Image 1 (cartoon, one colour):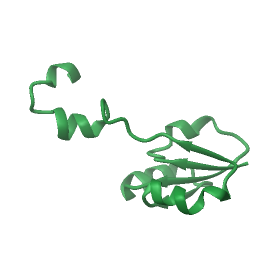
Image 2 (tube, rainbow, N blue to C red):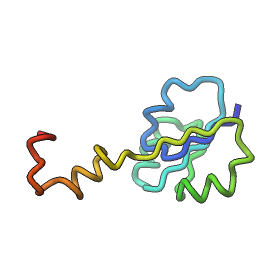
Image 3 (cartoon, rainbow, N blue to C red):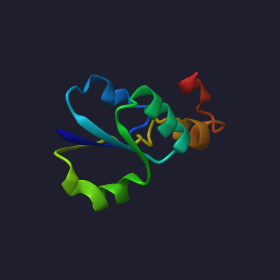
Length: 91
């Protein structure tokens, strides 16, 4: 089975997948490098997940798409919430 793993991150959801060929798409090169070290057998593509999906969806049997959650992800904590009186919630 050919799996497309969009917004791959460091591959947390990938750990339990067995007997499949995985192409992982991650936008951040540093995070993609961590993924690649954890799963050297996978193809890792540094690209925009939306565009990659549009261009390659027909090549895969299964597509896993797990975008970052803007309500409680690291981005929101470090950029959107930190310093605005919400620090106690995350401490």
